[in-house]
Length: 169
Image (cartoon, rainbow, N blue to C red; front, side, top):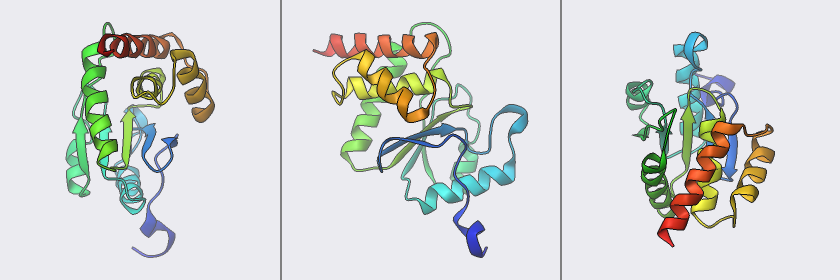
């Protein structure tokens, strides 16, 4: 590969939550009917060129995991259930994410699309990790970063993260 294509292309809706540490996007290659293998490869190349150490999939399915292996990317699969109580899911995610951050890893988190659940999980992490003092602040910061308002599903994830944080204290 030569020229600008050698550097790949960024995943759609790529957003830094913590500059040079933690980012969000939709699933590399797109989701559902818009998923394209070539685009997925180009986006994985971009992630490698940008120095990402780990891709974290919050999907309930193993989609893309073998592609990350083929692309030489380290990945973790931490499914975030789409309904109900996700406190156990969040506890696992936040514990691992905290460890990766301490180790200096550059991490991308995704679900199929950059929707309420993954955005809420990111806001919850900012709260859980003590980077922000309350759920309202975490929601406001992440909404500003991604450029869209968090809906009820995302707000519920933040509320569950707040309960986890309260239980630890």
